[in-house]
Length: 112
Image (cartoon, rainbow, N blue to C red; front, side, top):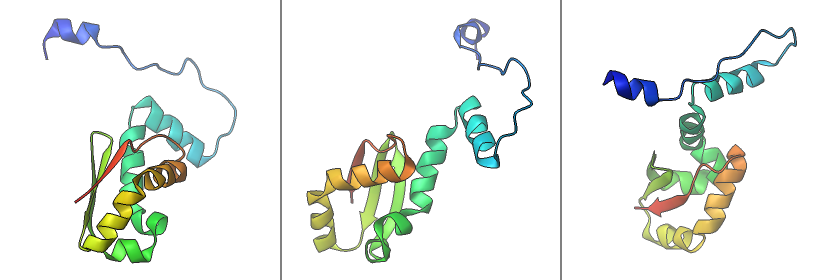
């Protein structure tokens, strides 16, 4: 990278000092992900990994592939009737996925 471009990039905020407060492992991991700006990618990976538990076995068994690109979730299905049914309830699915993760991770779902 060009040296002048490096000067324009903001440096990550560093913790100012240690605290003696004990934190849980989950809180420590969340802080670590936030510090390294990996929260979004972690949340996307969580949704893909837990697709079956979020959507149910019936939908998961008819799903060939699930992946993210630019905050859009792409779902490849092997059932045309299910695809039409899911397209009709697209906003419900987006709300369900975002509620399960606790953040606004999914902006759109595209069924293939």
